[in-house]
Amino acid sequence: MLHRVTRRGLMKGAAAGAGLVILADPRSALGFAANRKLNVALIGVGGQGGAGHGMASAENIVALCDADEGRTSGFAQKQPQAKTYTDWRRLYDSHKNLNLVLVATPDHTHFPAAYSAVIRGCACYCEKPLTHGIWEARTLAEAVKKHRVPTQMGNQGHAKEGNRRVVEWVRAGVIGTVKEVHTWTNRPIWPQGRKTPTYTDPVPPTLNWDAWLGVAPKREYAATWREPEYASGRKEVYHPFTWRGWFDYGCGAVGDMGCHTWDSVWWSMDPRAPLSAEPVRVVDLGPEMFPRQMIVKWEFGPSAADSPYKRPGFIAFWYEGGLKPDVPEEIKEDPDASKKELPGSGSLFIGDKGKILVEGDYGDSPHLIPNAKMQEFKSGRMKDIPQIPKSPGHREELVMAAHGEQPWDFPKSNFMYAGPLVEAMNLANVAVRLGKKVSWDPKTLKCPGTPEADPLVKREYRKGWWNV
Image 1 (cartoon, rainbow, N blue to C red):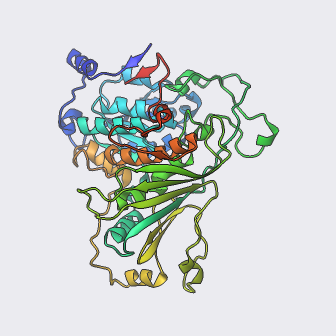
Image 2 (cartoon, rainbow, N blue to C red):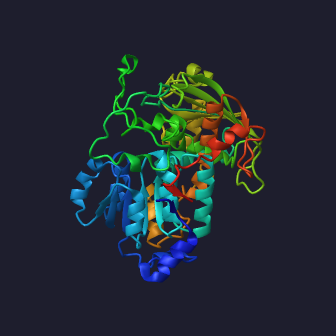
Image 3 (cartoon, rainbow, N blue to C red):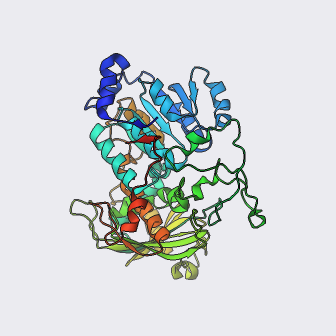
């Protein structure tokens, strides 16, 4: 049965006494006092879904959904009042009074599950990357703007102090004009660049494979790799972890970690949308899997007229699979530098008056280069730099807004912020899959002169399963 979600259908259900009313102010729509518990549903309970358990522990968890019942059972025992499902569509059919939905499924299910929450007037937390594709990111961000519900994407570093220092330094001109940024990750730590299995295996009795596939094309299940050349590394083909490397289900390493590692770049530079994306190096691109290694280059225009940070255009590079940029000479030659090599993951901002090295995936431990500039900051001589207010916590931002204690757009990595970031991440994958540089028109969601990009920008959903 095709599940098509419409505004009219929702309002009709509300009028019929379903208990759901969508109003302009989400605090009225949620309809409870700040000290009342939220009715929470978890869609995706195993893996990354575990991160949502703590956020929801003080609330009223009414529903749990995971396509694999084996990943639900342990948590369900701790929440005996919660009804369990393997198909998130059935969850929404059965629960009309939800206040908050946490989505932590494989990437290809993020959009339909999160969009269904937003248009129902529910607050929503969705793991990174926000969506599997560009059109989905734009549509979800627009839905949040329309329905004015609290949302947050799971890039936890956005609430950390390290990212705030980077934004403050860049926008205060501490390293001068930034015209180049390099970001890299130690991912993928799952298989990529492999051939598609031609064999099949029995579906485990706990796994609803049809629900796991969801809107993705129909595919037979395969449990573990049989090829001798794939004997090392993770054994599973798709579920529960390697789906990240498949075109149909994941977004590769750039989607999986770019929302974390590149967040300080996106926040500080405020690029809005890239002009283009180009594959610089691609190693072992599979027929249906992302490559084992890749480097991608984006071009960005000057800052928008309404941007708080005025700057010229700049270029940005993404590295994965063990690839990194060159170590800055200032680090090699500085006797006071604590490290002479780049970390496993991080970002490097190159300005005309210095550099910023951000270590790790979450904006931790940013350093000014040369070291003398960092010592100047530590001495307090940069105390006049405007500071960004501290966050009460990444998940706390959302819960406070969902309770009506803060405005609906109080969460700082809400879907309106996260959507454009994910659009840029996914444009990199479009360029890599097509094997060429693509220009980008954010108004039309088109790669001009490249019609073959269209199905990668907006994918076709499996017929009869779900649609917008």
